[in-house]
Image (cartoon, rainbow, N blue to C red; front, side):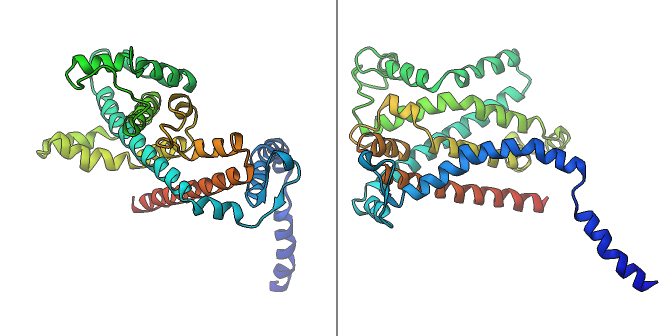
Amino acid sequence: MEQNNQAILPAVQKKKRKKNPDQWFAIGFVSPAILVLIGVIALPILRGVWISFCDCYLKNLTSPTWNNFSNYAALFKDGLFLQYFGHTLLFVTLTVGVQLALGLMFALLLNSKIRGRNIFRGLLIIPWTIPSVVVAIVWRWMLQQQYGVINYLLYHAGITSTMNLSWTMDATLAMAAIVIACVWKQLPYMTVMLLAGLQSVDNSLVEAAYIDGTNKFQNLWHIILPAIRPVLITSTWLAVTQNFQQFTIINNLTAGGPVTATTTLSIAAYKTAFQSYNFGQSAAIGVIWMLFLLAFTFLSNKSNEKYAEMQ
């Protein structure tokens, strides 16, 4: 009897390994999407990685020549890459930090029982629906040195001593300008994400804490924020990756200036490729940029997994 079972077992396992018609049907539906993803994502990435190890200019665009790590060495040799990377980290840190703080504040406000909150929720989405090019042009006019409304308001509020404040010709003000414009554009998305997280918090825990004598700040720090931690991590990750790739607003508002004060990795890659026509070095910038985001994504996922295991 035991020998018969041992003889039947391999046949049963072999039968299980065979895909049933439903599985083949599902594969047939999914395979076109997979092929499209390979064609528009995987192959361009692999092509870009290969180009980053080649001399690639307009003259040999169709037949790049292998140069090992020359492009990567050139990036670090003059120190400009580290400068651009520092500008990117500063821009991303400021933009994500400000929109996270303001987004949480607006989400808490819109989650409370205030009059007309549904109207405010609708109005809040408007900046997110405006194209980035339009946002950049609007803020460029608002920050214009001679007749910009921002300078007018700052002057009459007593914050500045002159109305001729040049936002795009000063390194600090130029960085502040692109941060303000990007925060204004992206804040609605952050607020909606955090508002969705707040609405999933168990109100009975908050009410029980109030009965035990806690104040609003203690409730926020010890109950609400831990409850929405996965949303906070995901929202922050999305904001970081989005702002690392921010190009449109920066290019149309400051074009990376003054000099290189707001030149981030996206602006550097664009200028290297389409102004210097050094496509190999531009691809090298993109590869390092991609590796950093992959590492950040890995750490973010690990943080989410550890938090899930603790629950």
